[in-house]
Length: 144
Length: 460
Image 1 (tube, each protein chain N blue to C red):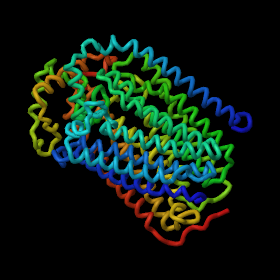
Image 2 (cartoon, chains in turn cyan, red):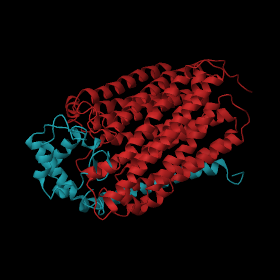
Image 3 (cartoon, chains in turn brown, yellow):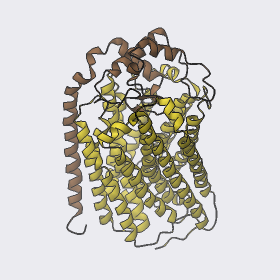
Image 4 (cartoon, rainbow over the protein chains, first blue to last red):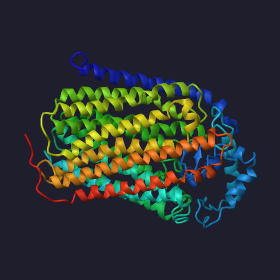
């Protein structure tokens, strides 16, 4: 890298390259935005699903679980939990409700969040909707 | 120290180190919860410890970046900082906001914190790394804008060097992409899509500009190499960082509901993301080889070289390991990501902040050039203890991640998550032991500030 390759050439590659690839990124984002409705089934986002996402966030579920593979690795993946629990919203609600307040001696346990029946229904609906997103066939199997 | 206003950097560096200690303590708590599941339950559940661990990291790195900017911008601009008073005020605002946030996590259930801070008005909480209450996020924006104003005015009125301008670009990018933290659509796929505009475009985008410019500054100072040489390399590094890193965002868009073509864009571009880190390593070594003086601060030189090498390993090599879509199909959502995250954050951002602290702190404390030889020896011990133990943390987490893939995703009879976790517990114990060694290294690091002895004389 002697005089053949000068500082101003490097600077031009920096400016030109970053502008070009940022514009390309915006173009891909635009295309993705128009392709998403067929994949996320947003027509199924009911007020209950919206509330479910709020419950998900307000209790920081992502702090232990992954959702579509993103989050913490302390507790199971929940993107497909609806299917893993036999397509049952009741099973999801039952699990959340039955967590012991003081945990399980020596083992990991989910906290008892004392959710209302409305919140339990909402989180189950949210997880059902999430399990129907077209994720390119991820996770590889039902265990998540 | 050439300009008296550079001294505002000192409290920023001290706060950064203090919060760093907190981050490591909560890391050890989490590590123990992996093997003793009910440790501190329900007093500090895992998710709370994790928020404290990751949020402290972000806050202390921001303190480090701000301290670095306040130290190097006056020197590069050849003029005093625009407003030292503003820098001091923003320091206390940021520290109080940061401490209040951590206390909020620890003392109140998260759902109650969300309610108390009016999250329903503008919901932004409960997303990984962006757990801060909305009002705190607004505070962060105000602090960063005030900081950029101060730094920007100094640069505008002074000498405009490439290091200055690249640093400023990185800081403005940091502020701009943080704004996506306020966009939280109820459609999870869109939420995740733009969440990465904060997280990825920070750490694999604009933060690399901040990293490269801080490293370039320190290398000029400790080697005395020609500025033209450094500036050319700096442009090459950040050009490659952005050319590969922007479309490289696609490696997060494989399995979250986004179209399949991202598997091609993401794989190809993120496979090239190690390139800027590799160039950074070559750059650091060739700067040292061409040095025109032997700087008495040997510890700072060690940190600078260590940053380049460990960033390449952690961000480059460990990122590449699982970035190709067909591999990521199996590794996504395992400890392999955590392994990469640990070595990348440590190697790139923790180490560059410790590099500038190592270079600047002796000057800020009134030394002519460097600490005593005794103090430097302790500091270099801390370098090796922390760096080697972090490499072992990475290796143990990688092993746990590989077993996760094998036991849950590739074997004939895939195990449920918790059954799999019990089988990898040995690696979690080893990780925790490596974590204790890291803490010992950190204690040695802090101790090095209190080691006396005769200071090293500056060389011409």
